[in-house]
Length: 187
Image (cartoon, rainbow, N blue to C red):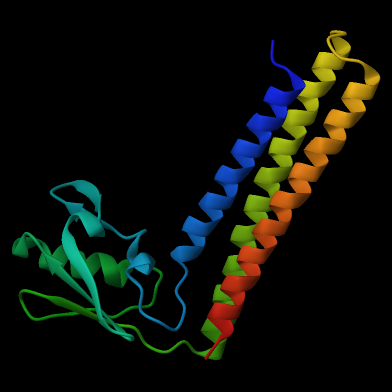
């Protein structure tokens, strides 16, 4: 059977993973600057297998508003270009036979607002995940109390500690989202 400390440590670890996942998800939301991380979610049909773009080509940012993708297998240049076009990033790649140039157009105000809305949606999903972890931890502590493995005082302290952990993680999520929102709205 697990102890209160193990339950708290497990909740802290899982909530930390939620924050890391939020940061990964936010990296794929584009801002006004070119960054190869915006291409992280692009999958290319490589001989029938959806393969991440960064496993098929060398990605590079030669200037602030341009990304280049140099495929290792030149025969895949068309498939890579098609996948980038089909993504929801609104990018228009151009290829010269060996290299794909992906100009990053400046964001319109409308597009920025859409991206912020998308950011809020992603952040809310991660807040819900943190709340679910809190609920799981609280249920585990209640089970210990029900099985008379801990006293009511220990139960109350554990619930308070779990709430503190949750509050701390929620603040980190909010701070990360605010930073990204500021980055998106920056012209």
